[in-house]
Length: 535
Image 1 (cartoon, rainbow, N blue to C red):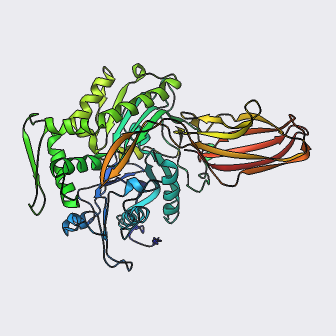
Image 2 (image 1 turned 30 degrees about the horizontal axis):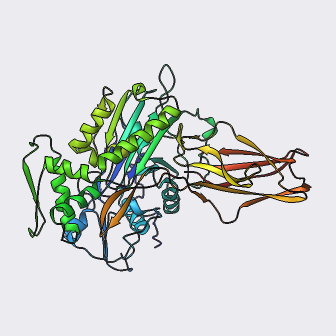
Image 3 (image 1 turned 120 degrees about the vertical axis):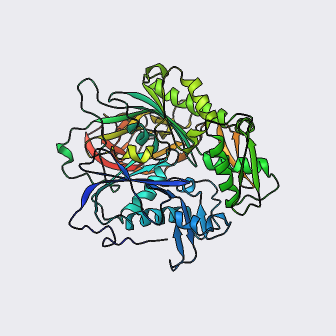
């Protein structure tokens, strides 16, 4: 679907404009919109009637009746019309997790694809901006586990927006920047959202007389900001991270399946389960107290105690997965000389962060490091507003990048690692390797780049709409980036065993893998090109 954005819509500027930055955190259940003017001390959540539930919060719901766009309702409109309780092709919900995902899409029969649904929400937010706001820069957030493909989707959508500056930051980094810890701090961010659970170790630059950390804004198309070269670059560095596609909406499904195992799951039941989950997460109830929640039509009543709720989460393997994510994240931190004892705080955000079992688990794992709990829903969007055009976010690879080579010793092809998972980017200096000819009169060398397909030991399998966590093999398999490897001509032809090419690999500010090839025999520069985006 190709929606068009009118630059002369309600975002037009009048005589009393308020210039500033808009942040949008597209969520699986709630999308958050925040704005900060150039002279504002604090950000403010925007009220965009009739699509906002409360200021800054838009239910991630779309009712799309037909292609003519005359039967479309967004966010709170869907709820007020009672359309969110229907299981129909017109209703799009729970779609963010599938944007950019290569897994089986349960929305394939919907009127809208997940990408089209996400585009409509972003478009509607933009066209409903108050007339007195002059949006000079836009900051968007992206999940960790589908960052590369999600970024590609956002790039296409946002190229239609008439805004001068656009930046993208992964959600855990945005949460870290909004945590309020002093510059120079190292912290762990735990983000339990509607569709994913993400953990990141983050080091904020600054402290000891150095400038405070903020982020450099970049256009998705790779064009540098005007005046960028005059800025002093400072970095917020991600030391380690891990993500998994289980979140609050999956917990809702577990609740429904546990209480009504023979009943088909629909939106009405899921909404009742979400209300029950929120009630069970309140701090004032007893563990054995039975809490109830009913569907809007009162056909079903869901009853559960906190003890039974926590037992259900343990049975489904949620804590086991969080343990694995925490260990993988801390392993990345140790590779960057950062341990749990080095942290100034642990930031817990996302709607799932309210669940007492998760808080208790985290407190036990990170003790005595203090646990910080900013406002759960808007923390990421508000943190993203700190990304002003003065520094760059220095991220890390979540999978790594390898080059397919012929191994003379074993007489077979192997994958030789170029950059490992946890490698910060952009890189400070290129990685250099030397390639030799494997036969006489060789006229070209082929370069096949790939990345690991599997790194972890759990995956989510959907059976009749119920997410189930299963263990998987940790053996690495590699996926080539392209079916057409990059070829470099050898002139003159190479001789067997002769060192021919010096290849330099680096990762730039746009997450592009850059290759530069030099013929060692005559010191001639052969090529310099971008091979693709890292993840």
